[in-house]
Length: 432
Image 1 (cartoon, rainbow, N blue to C red):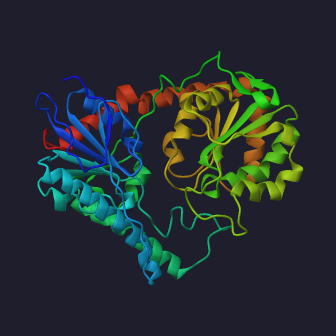
Image 2 (image 1 turned 120 degrees about the vertical axis):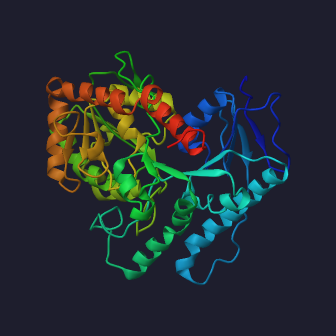
Image 3 (image 1 turned 180 degrees about the vertical axis):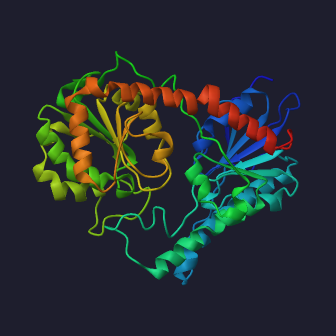
């Protein structure tokens, strides 16, 4: 069946019916659909299945009918502080359930619901469709010890109330894991965060990296027109990339060593990609953004004509930056592994990364990257300076990083086929 074009509906109308019966029906639920589901949703639609995507701020995906739901604003939060996080997720789950109810009342029943449970949207799937199977994306399960929460002594303070709040943040996740027929996580470390009683449901399947796009390119160019600069492969370019510049991704560690790196390498330029929001953790205690806070701390020591904050970038420019990077730095708390780390490896970058979970699952020191202790600023500075100073001696690391991505994380040959097989299995079409 020819895939239908994407459509946005407000759920006061029934989904359009295909002209021929679909092979199966799938519903993807994600606050910002498609999120991690983009490749698998598109592939299922291309196979002729009827695929719906449900979210608050969804984006179109070829062949997928995209539906919006609108959670109501919570006018009066609970006076019990510990309840407020779950209360917000409950409101979102109720709004999502109302949207699913309209689909059910119109006679539409999915074979499989695939949901990200992090915002509460998976809470009531089984109440709307008791017989439909449910698979959840187990991205992260919170823990008070041995994970992100107590990792960084600069920001962690022993606090019973904070631990209690963290425990309750898992409420929606526990409900989703309990109700789910299947689940999957991108890495083994993320799987191990799930409580033992639910871990057996969780398979390891990564979203996948499009290695055909994220690849080395000797003709790549990255320009900063307002500064009259253009970089090409071979130039002395240091890169640091995250969705937002914040401590969870080691922005504070990197900024504090950057003056020493640039002093040792007087011709190097550093390009930092990322917004000024906070994706994880807290805002600076003094207000403002983390970029402002760290520039206030170390900006006077930096040659700002060689430090370039470029905000967020379109994907093509982001890839071009990776392709001209001589050294890419990636730091993270023990937390969700960023796509940018894997895409940098796929682009053939020499990556200097923190020795934290789950980075160690994908990178071996001296084999396909260079690892250092997250808090060892001296080791970070020395390692980056060495890579910038002698790219030829480290080029093999970038080549090996690329090969590792092709072998383990390639979207077309590895991850997407594995995820499609898991979808088949979870929908009851294949015996486990």
